Image (cartoon, rainbow, N blue to C red; front, side, top):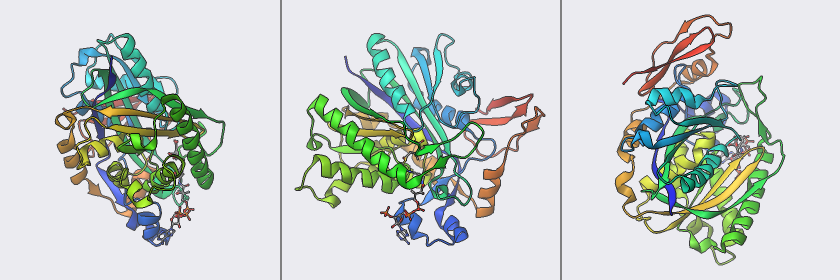
Length: 390
Ligand code: HMG
């Protein structure tokens, strides 16, 4: 039985800052951001937007033509948790009106956890073919103001329904994974901003890619030329390009040309370049970007995926695009969302960044911004209050 991605949709904040504005404040030539790291805009969530509202907006769209009663498991993947106990997925479960006979769990391993969700869902659906699994990945990438990671911030969520006989992509059974205890990027419980050893993180990402690919290749026997496109975890678009060039060198050999190779990832980079890092959502926003923007009919062709989560766990896996997949994408909704975003001044970005909810249990009702169908209305007695605006 074939199992894979039946539906995919993503969501990002209505607000962004252009990295030219950030560059000006930081006294940096803007092409360092535009070309050097390959990023143009960075999504910035307003105070009444968080991983739950972004995830619920993405999932609402992904579930448009799916029977909600069929969803038997929700995996909410995030490293921007809002509670140390309760899964963010339970808020989302209520906001979306999912069945009470459904398991809900939150998964964490930096940017890798959504991939765990996908791989777990594949096995679950193989055991229970009538069931569907909703994998939601939602994150807000926050580094310190003025820190080296600042231009690689961002925010976004992706939601995918995994099912038998999927309409978009059938997952192959083989994958290669790699785990190593490293301190390239981490966020202790007492901090709101991640800490990072930027240069080391790039080296470890590339090492993990080589190791995961090697294992995948041994298990599947597949070669570089078996793939029509590749999608990479994308903290910034130049990282995905560096990764793919390394991949080409390892797997394709001397006959391959860098410019040609980079064409195999270019459509997957489009959305992320204007959202910034969405951590565990980013690989799958890359998949949506590829499926929705490729001029090539990808049906029947194999895509390679590389998932990387600092710390680190990485996985290389693959899937085959289904015939007629174009009919089941949410491209128009995504384009509309991206085209109607509002640009923030540097000062507005800092205001959003610095906003903090009260931590003493006092009540706080939040001013309303554009947050799609769902919003965080406030907090009272340490309880987050979400509203469905639909
Ligand atoms: P930096 O020190 O500010 O930048 O850090 P740089 O000096 O290395 O410059 C970056 C590039 O811009 C260089 O190109 C420069 O030459 C170029 P490269 O050598 O890389 O090809 N450059 C210019 N280009 C054109 N015009 C100019 C110009 N000036 C310079 N005027 C760094 C950059 C990415 C390290 C930093 O932003 C950072 O630490 N980011 C966060 C960490 C990160 O994203 N790591 C990626 C791998 S780890 C990962 O992906 C996991 C993660 O998503 C977290 C998770 O798993 O949860 C982060």
